[in-house]
Length: 476
Ligand code: UD1
Ligand code: CA
Image 1 (tube, rainbow, N blue to C red):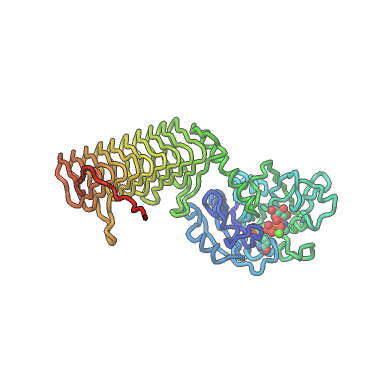
Image 2 (cartoon, rainbow, N blue to C red):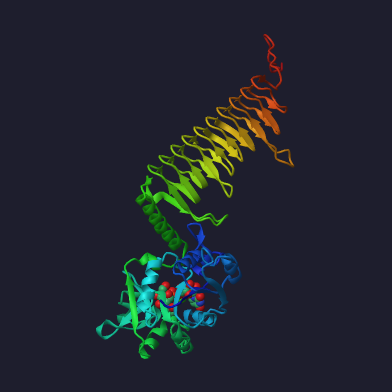
């Protein structure tokens, strides 16, 4: 196979997005559109990738730094195109940065869903010596460049919509914006482009008639799936592609046996904070109810059940665990773990470093951060556990909190096995509650407590018999 270089056009403004963010940095599944396209380049094992930037160039370049393919597989370069005088002019800026041999594939930074297999087939159609165009038939081809064929169906040229006559506009086969070109021909053709057309632009598509004139065969590789070449121009199109992508991810997961209540209400995204790819690794008989969002790497053990409207990021949920609706689990970079058979939520919040053992129960409005809960521990209502080590079978009462922060430093709370913490307690860290001990409701505990004992730290109750409430004075 001949060497492969890729040019990604990403200089356009994307006016219709009505956004300050450059179009190619708008996100699909949590990742900039341009990263999706660079991912395609990586799977094609490109030798070099040249990204043509213009609008928001500095931002676009910064967003791609260190992204030379998943494993640094290609050499990534940027060239600037200012002003933007058309797609032919864009490619002209890029050719000096290429080696000049092999095949050049031209992609757009705003077309995120092209499959690697499609691009490979296009490159094969070009065979290093033909000009290969990726085309698609559209029920409504308005706005696109049309594929004009001559005698015997051979491709003659591409005519842009704005330059086309009525007969040409009736053609439903359109150019996708993606082509594979023999590198040795490219610079020569580009040098002959003019901007003598309806838009006053240098059209890359004009090289097709030059190829025909030079006796270079032109192949049209026509695909049936328009989504693969759909570009993002507006928020509505972005949402449409997002949904299509999510449907495809959902279908792939269902293929593995995961049961989604509704594949149309499922989202798996990359984690923008860590750059972790969105992926779900799951065992058998996993069920996910509607409206859940997963980001980064999530592992779901056998028989795990995720209730409706949960958001789960970078976490492992062990076999048989049940996460009830509206639960937020975010392991960020540290990770979070829910043990076998645990019951979480509804409305629970697990933060980085939450490590829950088997059969742990975390109920509504309970927040757990950087804390270990051993097997069978329970915190069922309205509570906070931060920087705590909680022993087996501990029962942590409603409204209780660990006061882990003294305004400057964080301190740990140790709650040994079989402790009962009553309701509305404040455990002021650093502090240790001895094994089997009980803390009376409403206590503020500032000193370690002995194992097996009862600790109460609150004002004693006073009851005054037959007490008369003050009455309102009646003015006479
Ligand atoms: C282009 C094709 C058209 C095809 C359509 C598919 C040309 C002349 N026309 O039209 O045949 O059907 O794509 O979507 O190529 N860009 C630059 N610099 C520029 C101009 C564009 O980098 O000076 C980038 C844009 O950011 C975008 C891509 O090139 O990523 C395509 O540009 P766009 O203006 O969308 O092309 P169309 O007019 O839609
Ligand atoms: Ca245009």
